[in-house]
Length: 157
Length: 157
DNA sequence: ACGTTATAGTTTCAATTGAAACCATTGGCA
DNA sequence: TGCCAATGGTTTCAATTGAAACTATAACGT
Image 1 (cartoon, rainbow over the protein chains, first blue to last red):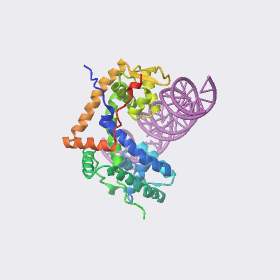
Image 2: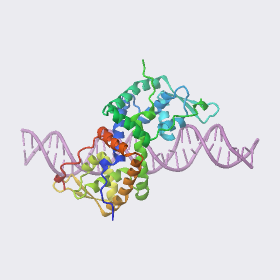
Image 3: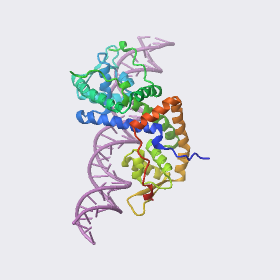
Image 4: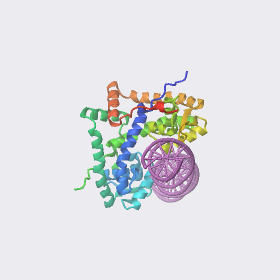
């Protein structure tokens, strides 16, 4: 006997999350898209480079921290480098690796975009009360465990 | 003074949701992708057609209920129709509109996929306790309000 | 009834993306 | 030392997607 109980898409968790997620991402993306011609992937690269500045990350590490694959990272970095937003050097000691850093331009973009992104997040969370925020945090941790925030940064440079 | 407090991507809500959402969607999608050569968009179309069967939906209505744009719907429907999975007629009284219905083949796919989708959802929710599930429900309602489930279905056919 | 505007859906063309192949370099090990 | 496998990253080619233009039909206002 076939399962004809129809799937109610709008109550289906993965679907709802997908809608929510796209809505949010797009809302923020539109801003930096328009102002800086920056795609989501590029913004993510900038964000992690800003976060781990000083070290100079390899593309592979950027990939890990952004949940993008290496091809996407390669392309994003290429665009960013072409625009003078990141500086790409070669790792000495391992000439396969790149060493990526934000340029002043890159930092400027970060400094302009980061607060807006945070503001968006704030606005979103403002729709929840304190309890709800706490539970959301907890639930997300269970559903999408955050990977440990990087160990051996010391081995790079 | 620039906002150099780095944006911690992995704690950033929109980012986390995006990761979570992609992980989930992909996990389910891989199954019907492999077994039926079905993309997410096509599956969504099938799901809403199944849900509102009997009425025969117009493409525009499918679009509304799947959060896809009309181009995406058009393409998904084209593929589905070509594969004999949906039947596309013309609305009498308004010959611009299409009237879409699942064929037997389409139903077969729905009946095979729907339970697996639900199982995935169950597995996911099983990682939460009852409290957490209730809060999640509530939080999602606040963040991504479900649109009212269709009024004037009577005007179609 | 007639012209204008709006709606439903499709098509086209360019940009984006994904998968696989590819190049360069390094690490392991016989 | 000299291979061979593994790693970091880029490129290529096809498939997917998005934006805008397009076709057909219907609705509206005069």
